Image 1 (cartoon, rainbow over the protein chains, first blue to last red):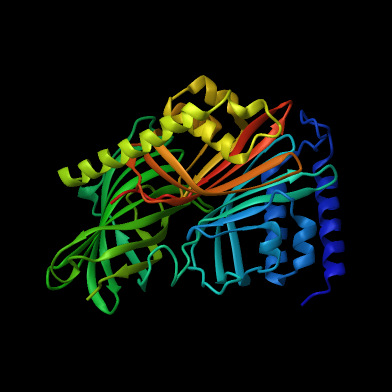
Image 2: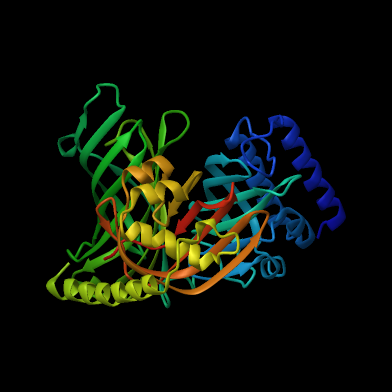
Length: 305
Length: 153
């Protein structure tokens, strides 16, 4: 465990450096919060500071970095106050944060991002790898930004929302037959692209080789936006497991697009009849919508053969 | 959704609508100008504006940094949210907890809602929610909301 006093000092120095970097100018807030020149850069630094404190499991540094208003809410319905969370910080060995979006309104900054983590909650519930959405709010206390609320949308494995479910790791590539892509580019430059498409491929579902098909409807502005789709696993026997897959696409770096969403079982046939559950699925696409996608995710299913 | 599912949804909506009306009957003036308003009162008042699809009321309550994040990864900022308001027909809250400090009230609860977002119907099972209100110039503004509900089967 790191020296708490050293970490408090480091946190204070980081906060001061952030303040100096953004340049203070009193905004519209009655509390005299600094107007942040680049909210995403500042918010990212604050999120990384928070994750560093969690990785160190540094109770005193967390208390120094958090507001009395702090609460955390998790996808399984558990939530903790500031003091309770400080007494039971999670165990994080790896954390990756990406696609950070931050807005500032005077003395408040809201940050939305995706986090991929390895570890467990303080109570010992393991996290699904993710990436999963996060919502973090920072408040200006008159001298520094402090974390005021945290929403962790990570579906906790084993003991999460799907009681008694077995975990299945998903890892497959899908391609889009050109004849199955029906997208309109109404502006001619990809600024608004919408329509439907079909992706197909093969996967392993709990040791059973299955065909995979996604039927998707999208409406993307500058490559970003929501999608609604259905995913079907088809076993060699012809038995099918049907899921709803909804989420959002976000442009990445190097011409890639990241898609993230949730899976919910809507029905099944044969050996999959009566199966329930859901999970998360993320993919990376290089190229326009309809291009091949590399997917990774997890499913928690009850009643599998 | 089959006829049985529709009937169940209508029955639940009726129960929830009754709860909303009961809550409205007990409500005083909107609490957004009260510095001592409870987090539950603030979130109920905000949710009732959504039920009533009161765009002007919502515009006055949402802060400029407002962001809603949903479990499926979708989100909306203030502009997008006001342009495409979700259809909240009824709601109920349980296990409400709040904390306050630095001009902030954070609220968490288990929420049951009859909700449609962008044409997608959400499950009516209790799901976690998180809301953060910010005291600005004599008024509480909602700056963030986390909705952990998932689309319905």
